[in-house]
Length: 273
Image 1 (cartoon, rainbow, N blue to C red):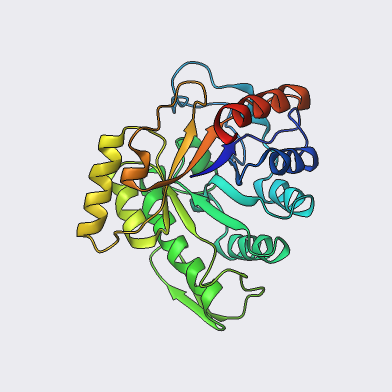
Image 2 (cartoon, rainbow, N blue to C red):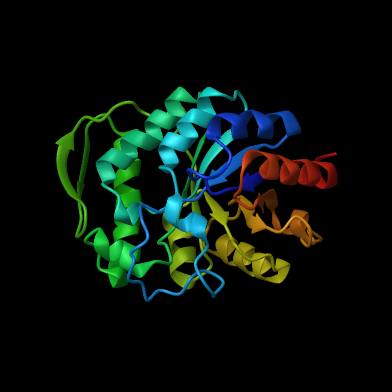
């Protein structure tokens, strides 16, 4: 079992240049950084978990800038978007950013993706919130072509470009793993059709077993699972090995350096020693 963390990077939290070495020193395998381009001031979408939206959602640093800094200050840590929102992003720029991160890190990038919960955020990017899943699916397919073909071309309903060259290509072959977040039927179909790994944000072993069986029936029996955003104080991993969970990514509360390091020490003492 590998162990990583999920941590919002903001202008008020531990600096990326300090975070990466701290994770490696304690034996963590990966860092997952969430993404929001902005939070609309007028919002009807409910906050994840209900209640008021925490402050850190409003103040995120760009995910690829964050991970590039972490890449420059580490040598082993896997560098993951957790999750990025490609439906809201330009597909060509995003493909280049993922490939560039993989190149400068020596092949350590993981591309965690999801549709996102904030419908107003998607709308501000010109995306019909009701169609953002279909937009995401096309953009993932298009990015794979950009990463794997010398002269890439894609013609779809939401993404359309003629033959083009786009470098660098990723170090990892055929491309950095696409880790799909979410447990809805649409998310699981996205995992089957476009994903290399699953990022479930629930921790029910029975559900993991159901999804594992379904993936096997769909011809995808060996998809890795990452238990995503787990509470290090309450998680019971009994049965995880049986259903093919190969990584636990623990939630770390965003905060100043001293507070984050204290949390990392506690997780490492309980889970990595």
